[in-house]
Picture (cartoon, rainbow, N blue to C red):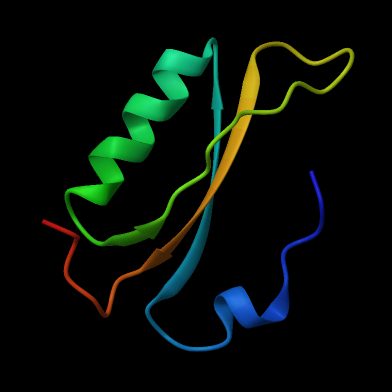
Length: 69
């Protein structure tokens, strides 16, 4: 995965979450759970790292804003 950009964590309440999961469905389910608690810039795909198990997903959270409803 690419390095985290300073702008994504420039203020209190902003966070980057990286999920490692066995499969796409699990990773996207975790992202959906996070979206029920705060505003999320969701990922639309997972990545696979050669030689590493499972998939990775990165999403961006803004705890200062309520979730989309």
